[in-house]
Image 1 (tube, one colour):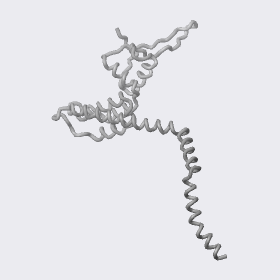
Image 2 (spheres, helix red, strand yellow):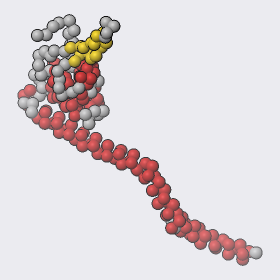
Image 3 (spheres, rainbow, N blue to C red):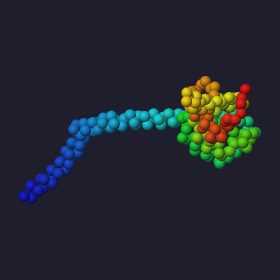
Image 4 (cartoon, one colour):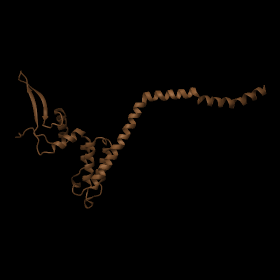
Length: 206
């Protein structure tokens, strides 16, 4: 009985070794490969998109840094002022959410540039960061077009029904051919709400 017991004990290491070999053997390897395949089928596209997103973000972040350095390097040395953290801090914090939105990113870099120039720094206010944060890229582009002239005619159109009533057709329309009436209308309302433009509905333009 004792001999059988010793033989069984001696066999245990061999059994353990065999079990370990089986764990890394063809069957287990096949299961592992299958799991990898299933994982890729389910999550592969998500992981791939996430990696591509990270690469794109990193690329745009580098562009932002290069744009900023270029603008700051263009400021004459005698006009450079110390960065105001009340301005720079919130700008950099807010910009990380819109690095890939070129129009908004450029507005932030211009704001930083102005805050570092003694000729313009007194006109830069922390509230501007919040205003830019609430703008869409379309708002930024339309605002640039609006600011290219001192005044821009704007109209609201209503259709008169046979019953005599008036039905709104479009509101705050302007002759900006680059974008649709609907796009301009939404942006006009947004820019007006932010206090960037003033829509005078009482005056006539000729």
